[in-house]
Image (cartoon, rainbow, N blue to C red; front, side):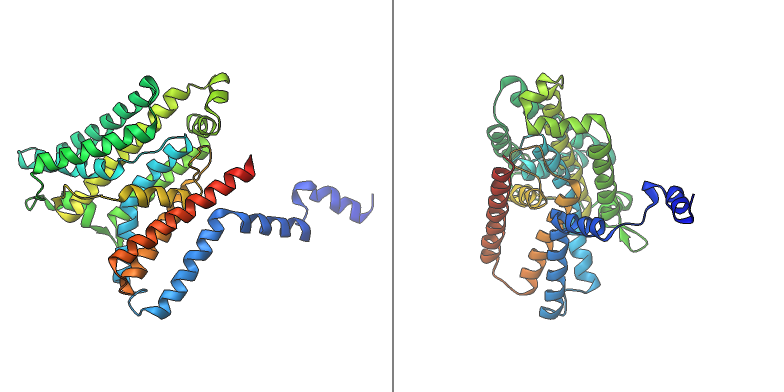
Length: 339
């Protein structure tokens, strides 16, 4: 055997150096990924805003942005998984506020904050289970059920508080730590957010049950014929979304030291927009946690930029609504191309 033949045999097909063609294909695939485009857009905004405002790249602003998108990002994780399964939840803002109110009222009634928080998250989980029941057993659409729950939950917030914020000034420091504290220079809120993102992304990619979420959202009838209990999948994703709203509500309560009955109005638009911008389809069957989080970061950077540039809050709403419309339009055309 010649020296060249021996070298080729020892290298084997798995050890051959990457050819220019394969390397070029890999780079092309990378740039076709939705997440890559989002990263480039976010980096471009960072560069532009670094010149437009001297306050944008300050530690205070970066920390404020991170704190803002971290808690909302927990809700986006739940919404993304629900969208992948073919559902949608318009009640996330109201349920998040209700979590704060329930825990706040229990704390003011003498219950320790940890128990009050656990009971509040359990209540939000039950709300999700009730929505799941109406969707899977009664046969109503997610849109109608979540719209009704949005109104009911907001009404419960106002009824329980009389429409006034609950001042929770005596919350113990160890409880406030989860919303206000830091480990080193990293806020605890961001660490919780990262833990939720890593766990959910791992389960979506690696576990059998969460792979069924994609099959259910892609074609529920075909998934049911193949033996997947699609109603169980939809019930679970609906419940999970509300449970994560409960977690976010408790973090907000610890962060602000109060329970705001009007908190979260319009949150559902930001959450859905972030998930769709990140690649989650309103038709179900597609989406990634990483993409959704990049969507949250993009919207957070846009909001911070508009505030630093002193853009009117009315224009900010118009711009956010336009971003949502653009994201849904892009999603619509991508779905048409896939058919």
